[in-house]
Length: 420
Image (cartoon, rainbow, N blue to C red; front, side, top):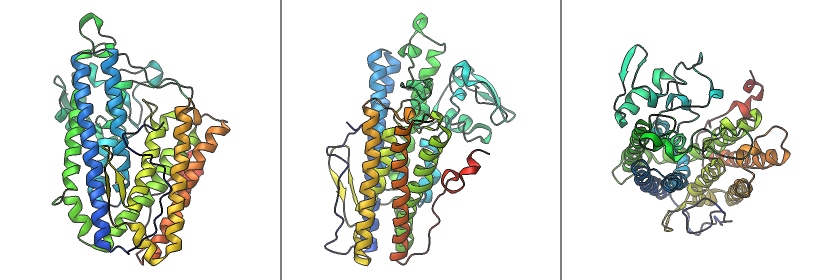
């Protein structure tokens, strides 16, 4: 079954036929309402995660670790559906790296297996292990990390020395602290950090359990504050909503930019095709928890949500209204039917990946070189995402908008460059 907090199944063949043509302003209102609801759900589930993390650190056990992991997985359901608001909305795109940046050099944060290696030419802090080292120097500046706080993580650790893979905050830093490294390669199995990594005294494993707990709490607190910011930005008087609605044509372009860029360069390319080309489970989006199948699914669902103008909240209520689909149907009903069908096809293909993963064929196993079944599953979704992007391009023209340059990926546009 899908990892979900939703009250209804998300794979639906929804008709997008419009009885009344929507206007641009109404479509933008629906889009902004869905954004606000999605981020509010992300914030609410992050607060549940925050409480679970606090309980784990206060009372470490198998049960409290399992509860924190479950809360993290639940938190990903609404958040991944918000990724479609990137690219076209500058406020979101500038902010997103604070909460969902990947991949990360996890050795910056905590202990890693010997096979991970040490500092590299690209990143001298790849194995810094802040949890084990209360003082260190970054770019000639001495850092006092005696007290691990949200401010320390945000100001001194995240992207330390300007290196993007020094990801010290957000969902994936928390994921690493809950699961630890996944050392199984393309075999079955996720990370298996013991709860005793948060235990007291002689029960502590791998050292520095108190500091590890401090880091986990600080990172989770920081995630909550980051989500509070973006949720407020989409509220009635928020900056993101105001920017979106200031120019109606530009707002419609923002919707389509997010849909096309997430579909093509980001998801089909960087998150899926690239990992398959490299046969590298390190390219999994949720690599420590083996949750990538759900991560991909909810990304795809988010694109469908904004086109159809409907989002099912974690409590089962629905936020909906005049949709982009209705605008397109008024201009070209055949094109609306085409894109609606392609979105359904893609979500179904992503659902096939979820079903396979939940039946024991995990996403990292699908990336194994020579695994024909895995390649077929991943490429089925990749091809669906590419195909729907072609129809999104047609929508831009049908609505008389300026051409949009969607995000690209070498894995799709210049495959030879991937191996150079």
